[in-house]
Amino acid sequence: MKVSFNRIFGLFLRHFFLIKSSLPRILDLIYWPTIQIILWGFISKFFTIYSDYYNNTVGVILTCAILYDFLFRSSISFNMLFLEEIWSRNFTNLFIAPMKISEIITALVGTALIRTLIGLVPAILITTPLFGISILNLGLPLFFLFLSLYIFGITLGLFVSSGLLRYGPAFENIAWSSLFLLAPLGCIYYPIEILPDFFQSVARGLPLVYIFEEARSILVNQVVNYSNIKNAFILNLIYLIVGVFLFYYSFSQARKKGSLINIGE
Amino acid sequence: MQKSIVVENLSKNYQKKEAVKDINFTIGENEILGLLGPNGCGKTTTIAMMLGLLKPTKGKVIIHGKDIEINRISLLHKMNFISPYIELPKKLTVRENLIVYAKLYGVKKIKNRIEYLSNKLRLDEFVDEKTGELSSGQKNRVSLAKALINEPSVLFLDEPTASLDPETGNFVREFIENISQEKKMSILLASHNMDEVKRLCKNVLMMNNGVIIDKGTPDRLISKHGKKNLEEVFLKLNRNESEL
Image (cartoon, rainbow over all chains, first blue to last red; front, side, top):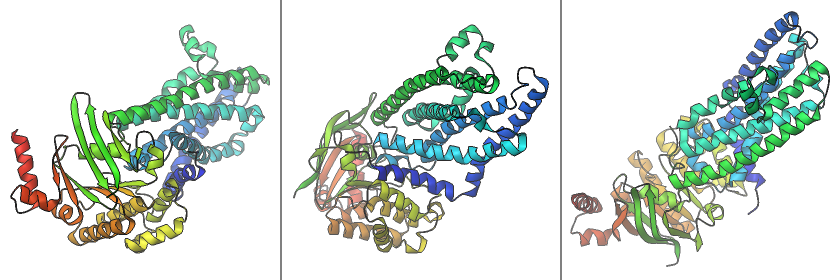
């Protein structure tokens, strides 16, 4: 049986209806990224004035904050879609509908992008009037950086959703904390050399290091280093394959252990 | 009668616990089969295996001649389920929920189907209200509409009238009776309401501790055990089981 666009669109609609009918939900999506960006905007302004390292590049930190928030939002958005089903006790209905796992993943990937953009676009738009900074200064590589971050965010979402599938709501705390765990190793606001040797080796296994290194390279040195982008995509591809495999495996384990029945709070 | 569902030697073990032990039964086309048993006897586990939500440890569920384990997605198109333990998203209106599930089940004329179900199940007056704001009777009818959105030929009803007032309960029972005849559905009805089971079901399975302890038509079970009604049969069988 072929992949059905209709079913993918159906699951997308379920979340679209949820968002469009609730102003507080929309505001909540916009609120946190905006606050985050404003806060980092002031910090970066302070660093611009007082730090030699950043004195030629206004808004390196702010740009990295926006990029990191994009990753954070895409991952959380993916997890939230799954958590919404658990909270609303709709999980079983979803899994007795004739949806393939690939269709569920595709629908969640698309919906997570919409949720992420609703939150982040207004935050990006305010950076120019407030701080005189435009993330578009990164030029064409910005698209690759965003794409790379989005793939990694989705991959993390797949890992966490796999845990939710297998262990149910008990895994919820991991969903919230997963990105905070990776942030120090992602070298978002500092070069990898800052980390102790052992952590540097671990960090090199994450695409984040290459993505943020590239952003700094463009903004500080005005040098586009496509090898960073390439490394990030190779690592992303490996993690994405593992994430998809894990999701399928968790679904199969959930069917064996019975965690698809009456999952919810 | 042609058999729509064949359950063969179905078993489910959770580590050391045997939730369902080697059960066998069939459901014919146009038949409502009652599944009775105390809480924790294996009814939900059996239904979950029949829906493909749970992988059996042993045995098979054959629906329309196809094994659910091999043809899960294609068979789910023809099946649906209602249970008081699962809900529809509360923040979506009734219409939105029905649109979503119509899409997921690949329904062609969605508007017509929703209109038909709204009419049949008397949803018209609250079809544009949020599902979470409805009374339990209204929610129950909405869940039934969702369960019928794909015109299933196999329907699983887990306590479909639990916590409903007598009038709504009667409406739902009447509706199930009519629709099963009209659409020639095969229905598995798990319920604790013995009158409901007697009224709707041609045959009944009595389950306890994961096994089928007796089966037959409600009248045959009542006369076989020398009792006045199905409830007394249920109590007798379950007391006997717990004494063993």
